[in-house]
Image 1 (tube, rainbow, N blue to C red):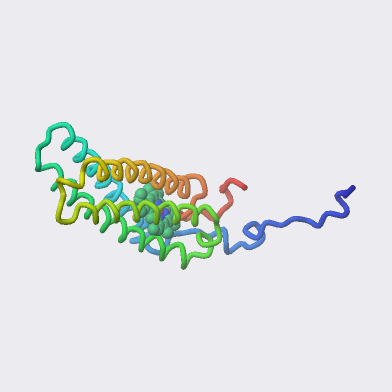
Image 2 (spheres, rainbow, N blue to C red; image 1 turned 45 degrees about the vertical axis):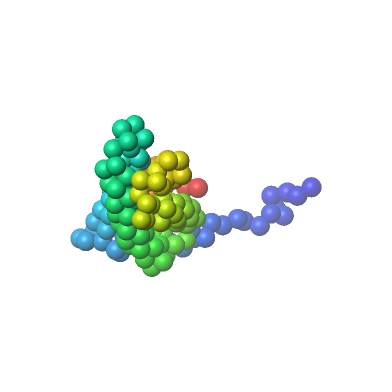
Length: 174
Ligand code: HEM
């Protein structure tokens, strides 16, 4: 049977290393992270794709598939640009890079961008034919992934204070 004397003291590398408590954004304008400013576009445009698909399903008006295809292109483009700013942040700020939550967010975001890419490619040259059923299904999936990725991004900022000027003293442990 092991006792506390046998067990080596467990240390948390993030607790040990003061530099890892600094998670302030470096891709920012006067301390305002560019990523947070840019993510509004893919979030809103992804929801527009779903809205336009549903309106096409309901009305049959050929305007909506064209609107959906352009919204999907915009969501992908702005999502990639937002993703680039987030990835630079992830790679250059040690306090962000060393937290697993940041990498979870990265994986969720790349999955979202892949779904947006598939949804857009499906629509190129055939916006109307692409909607039912596969386009609509991809739009539902993209909207759900946007909710998850956006919620998790908020968790990084509000729970872990990633991207903020916090020195870590008020950051929750664990
Ligand atoms: C592809 C790679 C991505 C990486 C590496 C990444 C990384 C980050 C990081 C480090 C933060 C913390 C704040 C900051 O430092 O700016 C953050 C916040 C956030 N991210 Fe991402 N992100 C990515 C893509 C996305 C995408 C595509 C979305 C769109 C749904 C998104 C939504 C958010 C949101 C909503 C926040 C919270 C912003 C705030 O409230 O201040 N991220 N992300």
